[in-house]
Image (cartoon, rainbow over all chains, first blue to last red; front, top):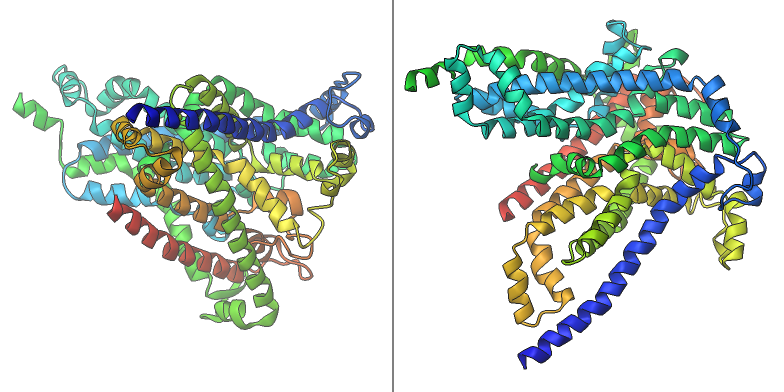
Length: 284
Length: 305
């Protein structure tokens, strides 16, 4: 009787296996299709994307890319985005480590309150404060520069940094810190020389968690920056999209160029990406 | 040994110094602007010339027909947008997660997982623009004709009756990776023994899902619902990319994010001058709705854990 039942459940499993592969395959096709269309059509010219929209170009044409790179200010946008994102993440990691180090070693109820205040920021949508932030940036004269984004992104990134790094520091072996202390190292030095090198994986998680939303942020550049040479990549994409609207192959080259860095990074580090991007919510 | 251990844990004030830089940034660029937005919602006028008007902005939003028509429309669209994400994005997220945690197919699973997550790493502005081109019937008609689906070649983004659905589905396509991965992590935490027991009892896949897996991942369902709620009520980019900040056609895709942008930041047709007080009032109501929505769900899923 038992064996019959087991056979049945296995049979069911086989059918379900085919169905599940089919579902995953179809959805993957739906994911890849637009990206495929974007990429191959960016190598065509203005008219051939209508004649042959979904297959490889008859003649590979790299003009769209050279045009975008030459006249489109693309490299300026890219540099601005890179600078802001890189610096913001760096500041988040430094300030977050300092906080986490303090909260993990500090006894009493104040650190718990501070921890709660920082963590609450994960749920606070900072966009709601946009109008006020606009006023603040005007009064400290950062409006219309990429530097206005730096403190905003830092504030956005701190909650997750405090969350992940404090968890990590709490589990950090006290004996190691103590040994360094006996050797005469100051507490700040212990953080920099002993603790931070060992928590590189946690720092990487925080960095990746923030990388995607900072890089892909449109909202704050849109409301803060109108100066052409201060625009970030995405803000530049909105401009180029309007400018090339009649030439879709150009538009697709712009979109490919802005998607490519992230896709490449993701393909090489997909495990870290997925872990990083879902880190905040798992325990929260 | 003991004394040196104590030296490593000095008085509170020392540790407080470590938190000051972060606290300053956090307070000055997060906490203060959030709270001060609420104060700002009780003022009217332009940035340089503000006068206190009490709750006048809120009265306008709900009772001044010109403002409230737009607001109610945006609120309802946001609710529809949110429901699409709950029903399509999160349900697909659970389905994919269950399929991707099947034992004995680790290689296949990891490939599909990587693919399904790709859009999540891209800017929705970029994918929104991309879908805007693809959904244009001028372009897709040939292919759809060829595979016998000519009926699908329609200006989905140009019709008031379908635009919001199209925009919502693109957003679901984009973000399904996040709930999927959260459910995958939750499902992997379920002990193997339970499945063994269920198998011996003769339970089928369907029963295993409804009676075992779903109840056990309930806390994560709650977190996903909260995240979806918070993100959707702050959404902006996808509508901006596909239907402009006006929520075209005919405000049919206007959501709270785009309305907030037009009223408080960009300035709205026909006046073209931003109204920070009214914008802040719209943001404040969103803020209160988020708090009212998040806290009960948080408490409920926490206690059931």
